[in-house]
Image (tube, rainbow, N blue to C red):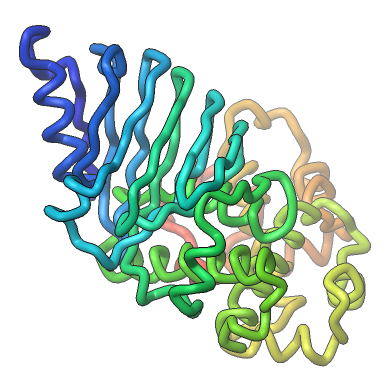
Length: 328
């Protein structure tokens, strides 16, 4: 469950103190620089297991400092990443400065002083116990205030996952939220290990989970390609088809079964979309890579109990859909 906290909830005369207290309680003590509080400032915050996720939106340029005085009244074993969604900013710690643009991220160790200088911006902060990273303290110290690009590699996965996670916590229960928090840390561990060129420090099961998420993303982006196949997927990820099949064993389905399930789910949604009411059923199927109309009809009936045309006429028939796909 998330909470929306707003600077405007307090009168103008006490707004700065009110906002400082909110930040202290959610992200840890720090000092907002003069001019850094605006009535448009807001904070969406929620917990995903041991991970706290917060989306901070500010209406003015400004900054913040975390000093030794703040640290003395804080938990000393906590880190966070800042994922910039909009705006620009600089994160400074340990003699380094990370200049961030939209999508980029940087690690901050909250047991040491840090400084932020930002434009009006939207940033997602992911706060977590340092012990949950499979890296030694010295390695973590070498990664603070280092820009991790959010447009490629594992950094792109962390960036998109974190920005989406904060907005999805109200859609899941506590147990699923905890798994999602763990998934965020898995992705972060791989991104940080890559910066160290020490991927062997990441446990094998974590590497496998991250690879599986990359495969899921690859499949999702290419569902409309009729030629999508396990061999194509394996080649794109520089693994053997045999290893790809092994990755999918915990999913309780085959690679082909996963692709079929996701295609059918996309077709099911399109059949209920009023904007596509004039599009033939066969065209909807072809849109998602299912070019054999007879095969599509049989697969749809096997999955949902009715033919696609009947499903469309019934408007879904009150059917709630298949069980959610297991978290990747």
